[in-house]
Length: 181
Image (cartoon, rainbow, N blue to C red; front, side):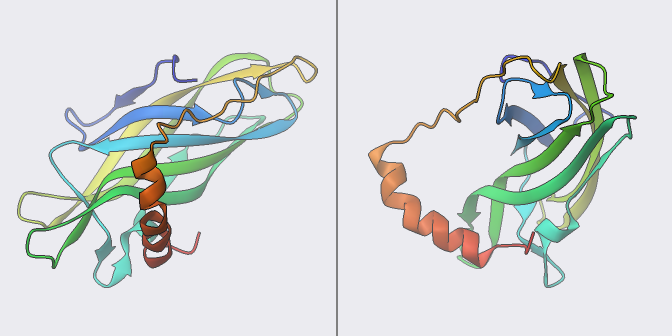
């Protein structure tokens, strides 16, 4: 799915950029579901880990424009690339990963489709204050007949020895900043 195009609409310069879309299969069969991950990267801003004592992940929403025969819903949110300020008092994230469950009902027409959605979240401005963002986006989706073969996609990981050494830290980070979803 990395070869497909997607686009952001709305604000002239959104603070988050949709960098990559990954799907568990190369296409969605009619009458089936799959998982889609949306990888966002910040542009000249950060993502707060909490706002007013509440985990910021809980405030992140993804609203889909309804389409008959197609269901999409946000099922998971996580931050990636979490940094600590030089003072050691502030933590911010540089990337956001959203997991979406997508289902094409049996009557949904095969072909190339688009999911329209609006991402709502908070980013941090230069002074470290939260700024609400609403970013409209269009995500490509390929739907095939129920018996057409589809390929399982594996996430190309640049697994290096450094990533393996950092895995316990990533696990601890996920536990500390888990939003309950």
